[in-house]
Image 1 (spheres, rainbow, N blue to C red):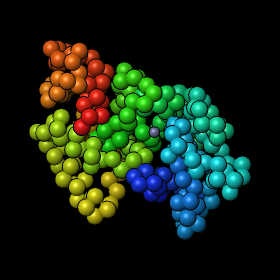
Image 2 (cartoon, rainbow, N blue to C red):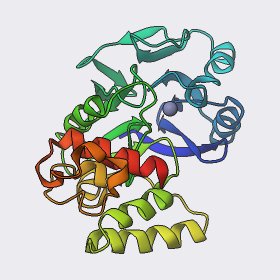
Image 3 (spheres, rainbow, N blue to C red):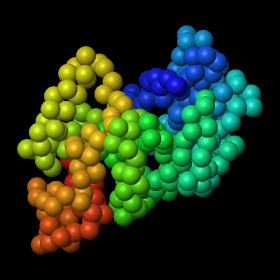
Image 4 (cartoon, helix red, strand yellow):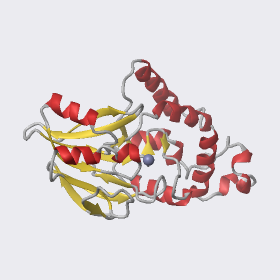
Length: 261
Ligand SMILES: [Zn+2]
């Protein structure tokens, strides 16, 4: 089975490294920087065999060119509709790829950007800046309706599926989640664990889909009353019908609140 390790980049990014100890080959997901990847590969005795890109933002792609220069001819998978020009193997929704013997199904997840994709299988999913632990990416290019639809696709993964997102945003996401659902016992318990992890400078990832369904407000937009505590100023169009919204309208309200939180 493939191993997954986190390589730290920038202030709070993780570049996930998949490796196969028997072949000493590795792939990385969203290398926004090349140096930390090269250092890690060198220390671990691994050779880079390919790159997976979830979307075009610089902190996910700026290291790709330098890595392709060092490891000539490697594959760079990424969205077919990406403005990022370094992709050699463009992917569409439902495409399947095999990385170090492990198959991944591509899920298109527009919302944070229009080109965003996730790499998924029943055991693990690389969710980039779409699904974070306790939160979701900002809506830079897409709409709340698109992002809700993207989350609906991710919800179909098995509960035990491990969620590998790109940023260590869990602690601040949970501060918001607790404002939404202050009495959610699972959330309170998880937030306590996350606080201890961060105090010790430890990673809080991966999460699991089962956990996200219990604690992530953006995963819970279909729950009656999820917007009970939403300040009306952030969603004036729905202030009189908070209990009767479509999930994507709840998603929009939560996202606007989070943007101002
Ligand atoms: Zn991004």
